[in-house]
Length: 212
Ligand SMILES: C[C@@]1(CC(=O)O)c2cc3[nH]c(cc4nc(cc5[nH]c(cc(n2)[C@H]1CCC(=O)O)[C@@](C)(CC(=O)O)[C@@H]5CCC(=O)O)C(CC(=O)O)=C4CCC(=O)O)c(CCC(=O)O)c3CC(=O)O
Ligand SMILES: NC(=O)C1=CN([C@@H]2O[C@H](COP(=O)(O)OP(=O)(O)OC[C@H]3O[C@@H](n4cnc5c(N)ncnc54)[C@H](O)[C@@H]3O)[C@@H](O)[C@H]2O)C=CC1
Image 1: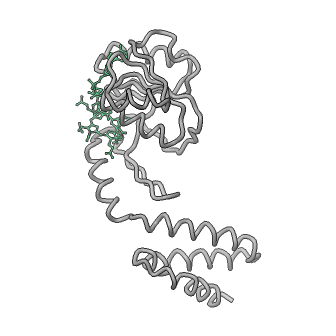
Image 2: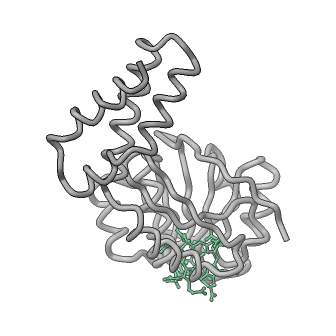
Image 3: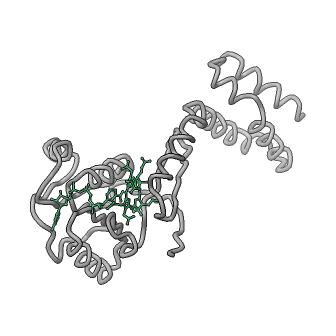
């Protein structure tokens, strides 16, 4: 069993290649585009929504089979074909070039896997089963989606603002930490979930006052 290391990577404008044009390739393309990657796709058959993305200039499409040399210039490569042989060839080329490789149909040939993900503003929740059961990862995602709603995006925005302000305005490190702890364990999240926006600044002032 591989021991994968989780990390969050900035893919803005990074050149990524997807080989294959079916449902799995489509899922990988969507998540790459969400991260701002510059996506190229190579495949003889291409799903309609992917073809449309190509027509609209959102991704670059080469409508043909993979050939040796295609990986040049790419940082991340995803293989999502129904042809095992392509996987083996890409794997050899990726090794030569030191490129990070995701293999949808034979994960152990690649060197990274994609987790299931929930995004709530700046909060990312990523779930992986180390490839043992993607369906369980999906089920846990659906459970967590109910538990962690949009209010977390708002809460985190507020925490970020308050943290910046506190770093400027509360010079004492212990007091600052106490303020952060009070914010995180306050009922601010409940106020946001219940849409009681007008009470938020009041609560912030109360928390600050208590610490004085
Ligand atoms: C190893 C990994 C490599 C990788 O793709 O990176 C991989 C591999 C394989 N998946 C397979 C099948 C399915 N994958 C899904 C769904 C997802 N698969 C994703 C990731 C991963 N899948 C990586 C491990 C993640 C982890 O650690 O848990 C998700 C999380 C992210 C994403 O793909 O973007 C996304 C859910 C997103 C969401 O909804 O939250 C479904 C369910 C569905 O489609 O509804 C099924 C059908 C049910 C089933 O088989 O379980 C097969 C067998 C194919 C066959 O039968 O031939 C293989 C190959 C193998 O296992 O050998
Ligand atoms: N990792 C994951 O999340 C999942 C992986 N899979 C596996 O991923 C693979 C792809 O699944 P789907 O997208 O449903 O398959 P699909 O059959 O819809 O698409 C396969 C694509 O591969 C392309 N292709 C075939 N030979 C090629 C070549 N030589 N060069 C470039 N492209 C080529 C075809 O044109 C087609 O677009 C399957 O092997 C499947 O077992 C399936 C479900 C989930």
